[in-house]
Length: 315
Image (cartoon, rainbow, N blue to C red; front, side, top):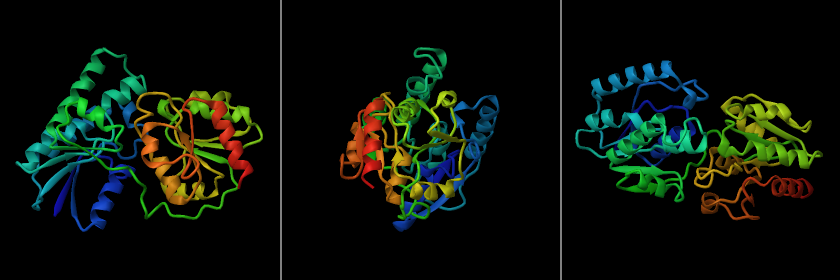
């Protein structure tokens, strides 16, 4: 089988890199038709007019050029909601698979609150979601908990493929002893406020927060035991995880937080690093409390602090 991985997808984003690597490892030939828009943009969902112009130019290029090699199926990578018209034209009747990872309206309206529900941008994002999900022959969700949302947005067929972690990067080697580690873009579903308050309740424990983003202002009032680092290179993340006492997942209380298992959870597990994350329907698809992770109620700093103290006391 030959797959055409198609669109304005972010080539180095873990979801795309992992899907392409796994397909190739399974003996599938993957060719790429990529028009870059999001590369090097840490906060792509905060994009403005410049990104809109680059996206329009990229879509024109995708629609105008035909692949030089034959293929059996088109996979539209993340983020690719606006790539479906060009993908369908390129497919010429072959199956089109959408690997969206998220709903745009769910992410930007319900979770991040960038647009008010019912506003013109919110309605436009919902229309983009519906058009993309309906246009695909198959939509791939990252968890069973996420699949119903995709179906409600018009997906005709949904299958689940967990995110996983790249084996070329994240390998076992945990030694521990360092600070508790959170890595990620500081967005609402991550529950940064819960992490900061848990650290305040356990001042004897060191916590290292690596990342920047929407909720970064919360770090201005962090307690002395919380270290803030704007970012580290992707290839350095395994070293950070190997040294951490444990990795912190997500603790947000939004509906989206209950539907996803983040990259950081898979990456920690691949490194053999203990993981603490919220007890959600999505997490329960993969994790057993007290066996493969410690699961705590979402948005509960006291429960998180107790879990961190338990791990610190039981090396």
